[in-house]
Image (cartoon, rainbow, N blue to C red; front, side, top):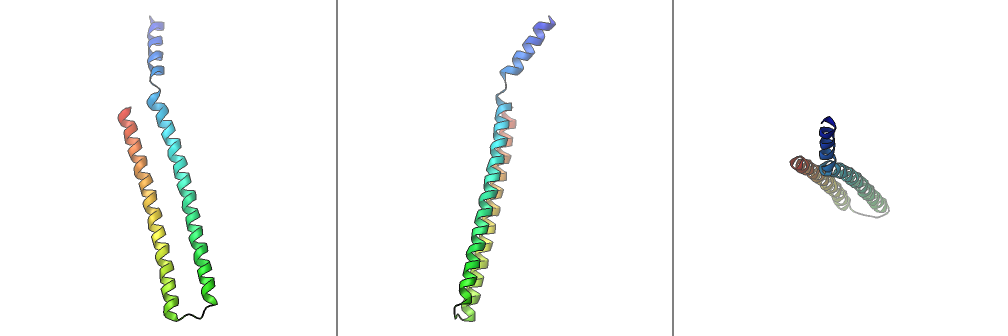
Length: 109
């Protein structure tokens, strides 16, 4: 009788690995997506810094008025703030998607 009961329990456990397996796949997908986002954002940030460095370098040799220089400096700061805000929004969207995925997994389980 015990063998029959243990066999039935093992059969039940082995027949429902779906939600557990999907949970593992989602967590690895989220981690890789998070890593890819981090790498891409770092590349964007270094590209912006490089671009602004070259803009500053090109301004040094030019006879520009003070107002023009200030305008260019202001534009570079605006670009920097815009990139920071964009990246912050992307990170928040990823966190929201992760939260929704976890909730869906809990509903399925």
